[in-house]
Image (spheres, rainbow, N blue to C red):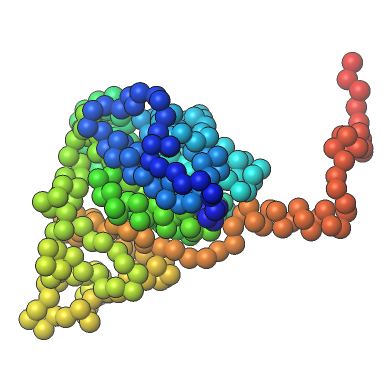
Length: 340
């Protein structure tokens, strides 16, 4: 999204509505909401230029709690509605809020095509690996073997990796953060806003009622440094409290965790490259505990022409060559039929 200058200094309070927040106490959505309400006034964009579009699910309540324009749409169709909004009014800063069920199940096709087209908008995927609104069924990101109300003997599905899916769909900005990583989340969302094209941000979000502790190893403060890998462009893949562990490629060109010392130095580690080959980025997206730390930050950021700019250019070229269209004339032209 391109930045738009504002003239009035806004605060977090300006982006909060008078609606009662109706998520379960302790839900990770509260942290994401707070971070977003803190961030938007810092972007220098007039409040009336923001639009938040949601589908169905716990995350879909987001527009009610943000004092900006919003659409609560139908299940899985938020990307389609958001695309129409952006094409109609390119000056708007359009944000999609969706859950892992809404986006990756019924909304799967809409999700991949908005990323393929590279429409200039931001897509936030709240991923708690469960269906929360409908009371605890397994979702497309639930791990194999997950016992839920809809899989009492354990899920036999293989879960989606949303980051790998986004990369496969050609997303030009792919990132991940965690609900309670507030400074980090704000940094990622700021970068998403300034990116020209579709920004896909997976946000791990704890559902303390139906899937509590799904991300405990790296979400809680005591394990965060040891179990998460904060990505920085141009910097080696280092992690750990003392930044004494890293990731390199072994003799078979596969990633491995190594401890610095004993002949191993930072020079041996992989260096993060947001514009690197897809193979590298997909490898990074596939790193999972307990063998590897969880990568958080911007995995991929490349520049590709956006769908909306291409459409506007095409319309301008055709208008210059043929003049402005006449809808009434078009409707009455060619073959017509009279229906009795």
